[in-house]
Image (cartoon, rainbow, N blue to C red):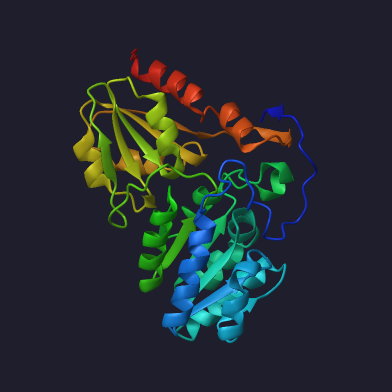
Length: 326
């Protein structure tokens, strides 16, 4: 494993739920977390089966909801394993729990509870995370979770949504809460300029091309489009990776070359794409977050550059793999 150094901004600590509100990339704009909070408050007000379980993160968004629904808005404090266990108990009573905190706390720290209290008990819940892979880069490794989707992917019967816009967050969240299964919604401070999703679970063909097809997941779409704006390549957008809309991916192929771009651990969905194309001779390049251990934290943009997820890096790697030029 490589050790890579980036400029340190400041030492990290535990989040109080307010830290991303003034992220320079989204200053003045509604974030996915803002929309999540508004939609969840509305669901709590209009559906007595919905419950919300928090662990000291984003509690300021739900102060009024907690007053209106003290029996269905639960803050367990900094106890993430308990967070998921409480959700499992609520689900056993017939409630539909929405569970929220940072991705590393929700998936990595409480993984055993996710596996047993939800999966083994075969009850449903909607896990909603913030922080993505490194949105809170200045807090260091404790707030980074590029492996979360890969971990959830080891468990059976999970749906995984990776919205790329606040409107998509609302669409996917409402659909998830209306269901009964186990759903992970991975929110980010990063967002595409426009929502593309119209139906939950469906991939969206964005552009056709003859020299290969790029499958862009969630917030990676805009960097991919910028990187390939003058290249003869197709682009398909997916906000749901488990299950993947393989029919749309297959129908978009015009060349046996496929590039998968995900905003978390590189290769997380490679086996899903390969399985979807098992009867189609093809080659696959998986781009995403690498396994470099960063001891000086930098900014999210620094991490994008390091992992080749900025437009310059994407253009370089896609161009080499597909052997395309402007």
